[in-house]
Length: 404
Image 1 (cartoon, helix red, strand yellow):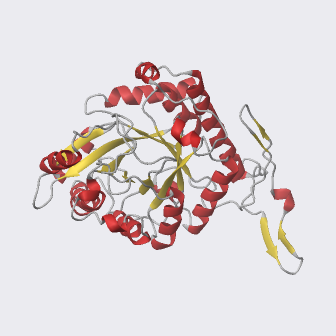
Image 2 (cartoon, rainbow, N blue to C red):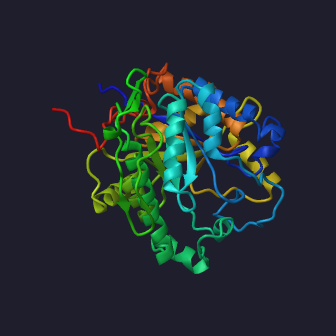
Image 3 (cartoon, rainbow, N blue to C red):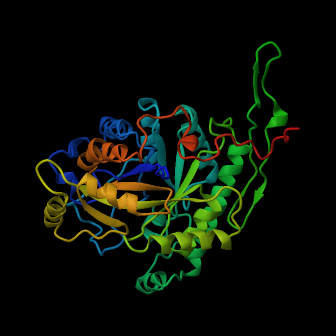
């Protein structure tokens, strides 16, 4: 009898939760959504559940659902954000094992800044940093910066997108994102592991021969380097991306260690095949791309079923929830059944419908159920986020002298 494959489990945090009415729930603490305490409490719950990581959603415009037509000035939902990277920086000293993966948009953020910020997070978290790459095709977001024109996707573009086609400007945004990720990775490598000497006697803090120019020249920008931040504990923090279609799968295959996908209950094998084909098209070699399935969850509680909670929240919002991911309602046992039935995925990222309530249910009900089935760890190993996810944990700088 074969040993069951352990489940890798992360959670995606987005304000009060992934339902637009989540902030109106009794436990949601709307007056604390922009406090450090609220976020450290969520992270403590995730760590209590022994989860691999939390991703922290972010955007450069007010939150909204891109899958439905919304009034951009609506005030019946949370219309504000904190910066995801700064939240992760707050969580780093308050957690010990949990991976911290903030979202940072490539379209309006310089790769040098991204590299420096995430390397710093990896230092302060002692090797638990990651990055969720995000592309912005929003005219509204571009208007905050005024440095470039982004036409945005009109109705015709969205129809083409449904067929797997994109306008040229959007293709360029994905190509640019791949270049950003490449430069970020080169900058992470631009200091060799032993570049810091810190020898007071000889007055040498660094070995200048072990700092390297990256000399990147691309269509969208050029970066010389090196970084000004020493190589971080992981060397290469974990890079992730959310992807729904071919061009996004290709970006993940070019740039990421791990991709979040959104299968339905019936098309998991198709999605896995599409991701594998995208990796072949871009010529990915070496370490395979890890594929995690996203599920938006409303778990049963002591006083109410998940289905009833979702219906009640939809009534409060005035419309039915529409999501890119599978929406699950039910018990922890039923969710464990679903995760166990989805074969071929390297892990799962759960999106709590109501952050406080559903994350607590994941930690107190789902994780123990998975443990009873022998599918989930009972303690954290002493390792980095890369090690926790089963990625190579000791990656030498590409610019270093190969070992004899």
